[in-house]
Length: 196
Image (cartoon, rainbow, N blue to C red; front, side, top):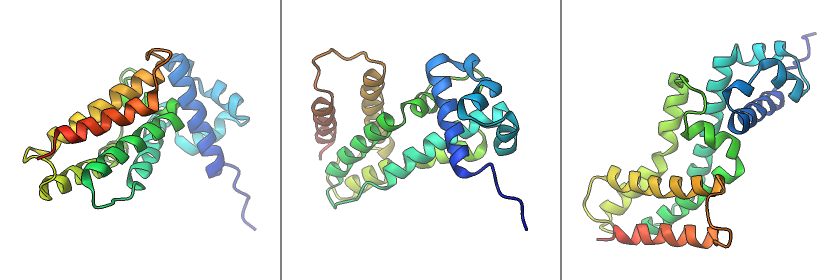
């Protein structure tokens, strides 16, 4: 009879989420494998078994953030209205950041000095934005958006959503600011600005 598996997917995700929380709130020096194991109610052996060492753990946190983010982006239904789809992708971006703020800061900042994602993590990060580029290409092809390089529209859309989400997560917006309504209005204005 095989030995029961004690280091399962639930523990892996718990460790990744807690590691992301430690990194995003207290910085890279707070990520001690002993503290992480204690916080998750497991042993450092489990961490080494699941990830290897600390660098592999940080890479796994980065990868998990983009895996979740990419899944949310891919789940946005294409409606045949590429300008509207661009707005829906922006809304999904915000939803993802708000659902996993502890991972968002690892994904888009240098939370761990000297960290360079591995090949799989880098590929997953690039692929997570594919729905955005595909939507922009569809809008250009359909004559909805102007004939410009798709990357120009995609990167400017990314800049708007990233900037607004970062301000929101950092608590830098005015106290009475209607974030959800203003965010969607900004996305719509951006999409309209590229119309042919």
